[in-house]
Length: 263
Image 1 (cartoon, rainbow, N blue to C red):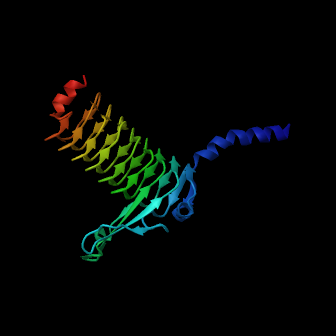
Image 2: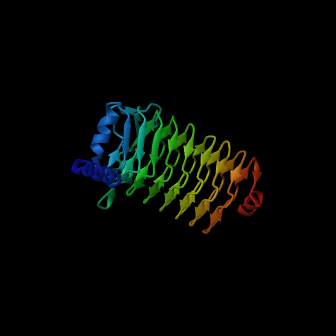
Image 3: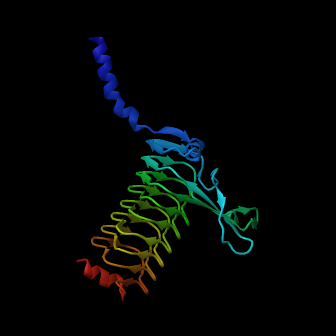
């Protein structure tokens, strides 16, 4: 009888135990990536910087002009993080010139980028420090559903091949998607932009879903081009907006005209 009670107690305790996050050093994740192993973590706290810009397969990219050098690392395996907290930086882009030492900036003329060959999934994750995916190429699906970015979310010039999902993401600082060319089916439904939502010069090839998104800062869609459907039904624009030169199906639109279309 006592053994049955003990077993029942353990079973009841399991959900509580699973609620806590396991601590994982970022170096462990990088070791798996360098070995080409699938990365999969759930309910984990990732400590240290997850810097993927200097992997073992890093190569100097051809075709750069002048003295500048671009190094590219490639994550060859699928990456999955569910309900994880990143305590340090998550970097797929690094420019030493942006690092200040004393009163002088470094002048290395070097840039480090990271591409992803397989699916990448960060769902219900917390990015507590810097996150940078500038210039990254996602050949597989990319999902950040339900995640939270405490600092700038840098996706400027990022290339997505398919299935991009930022639904219910909370951007506490600037969300920078400037110059991004989005594929079919991209969704920001239910997303919250507490600071500027920068989609300047972005291209949405086959529509975009901002249904019930909330814009507390400036909604910047200046020069953006959207084909097919621009769904902002139920979206809340609380900050400023810039739709100057924005085009939907090659016709100029404003926020008020878009809101009329989505009634």
